[in-house]
Length: 430
Image 1 (cartoon, rainbow, N blue to C red):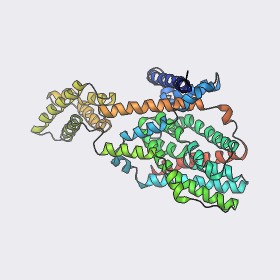
Image 2: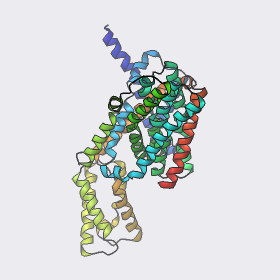
Image 3: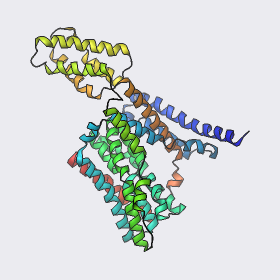
Image 4: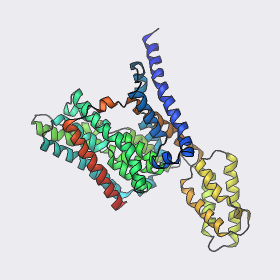
């Protein structure tokens, strides 16, 4: 058998357990929601947490054979692909709603955390290489940022392991702790998404924690995460300049090259999908548009009915029938139409309860998604499930245990300041 054929089998063998864990997580999610209220509402156990927990249990009990690792490694880009697809949930108008306040919050914490770590490193006499790794990892997006700055600070393997172990300890801890704290504090989806998107050190855990809280929180956390990652080249340049100055080495820092080569390309994919959604190439549906228009007309005339109101009600009833007959709408859209399809649409007078139901349905239309968006959302869920299953299978408690000493102290201070500081800022301004 050729080496190429053996290699292909090895990749398939490694992908199989990832797919099985992801499938188990997706099946277990609705079962837990239906049968274990505490797990679903208090612990926020959804497919994301189930996937990573299952992977971690396997990795740290029976272990993962070396023969499976190449295939498992193929799932590493899955989270980034999921984030790109996540762009279909937004329009440019929605992104603009976040406003300058959110951008200022993100930027302040990214740059501020990196500066704090470098300042502490000088006071604590931490090695420059470790300090550079921790500044990027804690300031921007965790493990990916650490890897990006490795060649700049000429870090050694052991130093990389220390930095990654430290980031993962606090990242995994926050992944499970943040949703519980958020529920206890009764944070809104916006507040929680902003808090986790700002306060959790590692990007993967940002997506995991916010998606565990709710889809809306996941959308907010996703945007905060994207903005954070966009600062990576700037922070790498900042660390490079600090490193050269502290080590007193005569070395040119290629600022332009760093800004270009360290920019995360998946961000461009995300923005492309958002643009396509905003331009109507994704999610454009004439039947849904007509339904929304007629529903708004009916709702707007409830307080002062006119002869056209009953006609608009009949039009809305017809719109609902069209979409029902298509049988390709999302469950959320189906639930919205349950609120709209009340007896009043048959032409009789509205009772107060029916009027309220209709108004609630109209409010829900903003979250109604078409069949193509529903398919993309499902695809996004699967990529996230695969990505977190792979993360779980790669999360070794033994490797995390390598974190210690001064790197751990730096990570602890950075994680604490970001988590507490972000929570205070979010509660005050969002």
